Length: 173
Image (tube, rainbow, N blue to C red):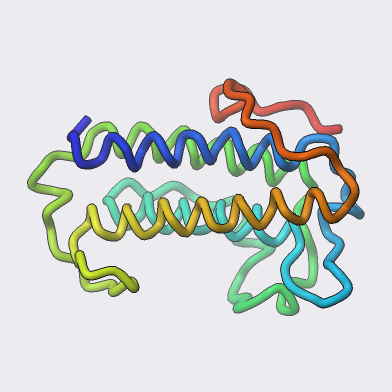
């Protein structure tokens, strides 16, 4: 793996486990609930992160069909989603795209990651590695939101336990 990609891939790999850990033990109602002040639900954030990883895989030339498209469609926000995927479906989609993305990142060359992109992100580096850096931060931001929501729902803090990742999705609670 290219040395510029390796630490970013490690963050994404960690986040794969952390999102699964943060969703552990939640029921459908909890995962779809929103705090009284509004904001996103855990189900929305998990779907959004999965969708974003599909976006990233496509941008690095390794697209993967997104099974959540039928739910997310053209949704621009949480209010636009009429039907929600069940937690086991979210976990399965997350694990599948995470494994696919890890493999795709491992195969990127120095020439590929230096390629300028037409997409602009709020980061000065307009190359593929810059997009990857921004999306690794984006991933971490939303995983933190899920961990916060988990605590607000009265659940124990998210675990940093490793090994629950893409290779073996956990069974549904």
